[in-house]
Figure 1: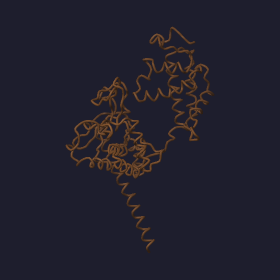
Figure 2 (figure 1 turned 135 degrees about the horizontal axis):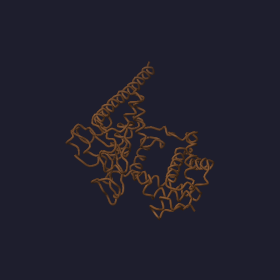
Figure 3 (figure 1 turned 90 degrees about the horizontal axis):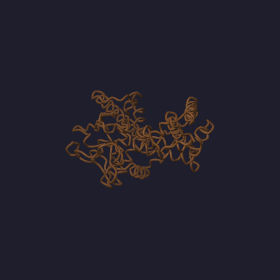
Figure 4 (figure 1 turned 180 degrees about the horizontal axis):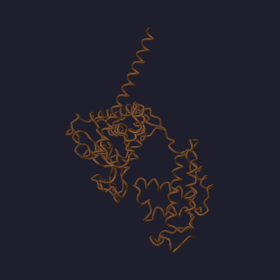
Length: 380
């Protein structure tokens, strides 16, 4: 056993004991106060913990110090193995190796050199330089299209889920991540203040009516830009502006609710409310209901709710918007919360929204003209 009086782990938390195995290293990573695991957002922690359990169950009893590059290659293959004859899960395998590297790096910094963690980190860096697992990067190429979203929203309304139609319109038109629209439910013990609670959970980070001003300008702090320790600080993270009326599908959905005057809409509260519960959707229920509606709308199962964001970028690209502007449209730029930057970003998004609208009209006109030509040809 690797136990040392010099180990900060043992001095800080006597319950944490590293016995040389990957399982004990995984548990140290999840329990130690200085671990980066403690700084992860709640849902990310849940996902990481689930994957760490897989690691503990599959290679947990193996010694870190005996790990070789052959082991890592084999584990990558095992993590990527498809289920029921499906496609290899290369992205999943890459993520699992990334997590292994994170806990090994933690061990390198927190444990004696004899733990073997440093050696594993070096091996994985060598594999990264050789791009050994690079084929798994960005393997998903699916995206939602404008026609699919139009049909989807119609289907959602037909099923009585008007909230999902509005959420889908916002996500596709504004290029938003689902969490920024529907929010997330976390335990009340997590950081963050909110007036929306249910049982032992509270709702954070989603779209709220109080963020929408009298001109339907939506001011929202992007969830991905806010670390766990910064949730309580309103100045932490990136805040962006969206002119909702510039996005045709969003405007149409708002008009379904009421005439476009701000006083006709709620002054506060979550924008997306489940018709079933009267509360914001949970991520799992929204995902399940979204899939049911998507199948009725004829959207393939390999296209996911999150692919609306990719669809927004793809449509902007097809509309001839320069790639740099598309990048800024999605918020892929340095963090800056100044009013000048926010206003410029909003104007850029509105410009792109108009370009996408014009592209849709060109496509529709082209289809109409083609039908007319074929009709004349058949009757002539």
